Image (tube, rainbow, N blue to C red):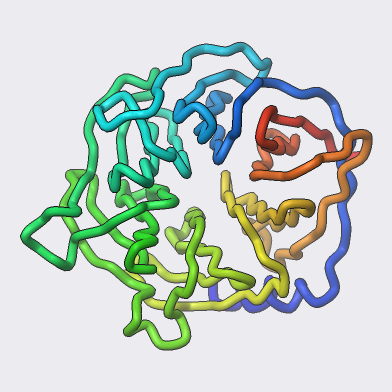
Length: 279
């Protein structure tokens, strides 16, 4: 994997381009902050504008929405990120200092809150991004302490990494993370993507020379975004190339995030999801 990441780093120097053509838009949001797509084609969106979570399908049918500003189990205060697998939905409820867990139909299951824990090592605040590995471990960004936290499926603290003792892998301003099938954690940190193994050891630093705002990995298809640009790499191949994606037929005012799913590119803006097909 280190070899693959090195090749990915080299490919950034001479970025090729792929063109995708606009097909349609689905969903209507107030001020979307994040989204994720499950293998069975359900799309979950966190809407910062209304402090809501919205579930739609790939046809744009609105299946469920709930939330609103508050502190209880079914309300939020800045749902900054959302991650979904076919059975469970995780929300980084930033200003409530918790990771909330729901089933696939958005029924509340539990919340991880450790701000007042007696164990200082597991305390965290203002979580801004979360994802789970294929082993069921939960990783999230503790933005208050600028580090990655790792808990098991039962909510037990395992470790933290990327903090002041991480040397060149110390995180300065981590904003979003994603996990590949090898359980490596990719973290956006200003203009860099810092990559850690599942033990928290730093294994690669990818300097993109541009300030990214979002990173998503679905079926080892990596997408990373700025406000205006989207980059893509297929992590399944031996020699992945990071390509800039050119969007044709629609002018995106501001990109929030993007995901490659079933050979289509889903682009989240603040108020809708744009779907593009590769030309």
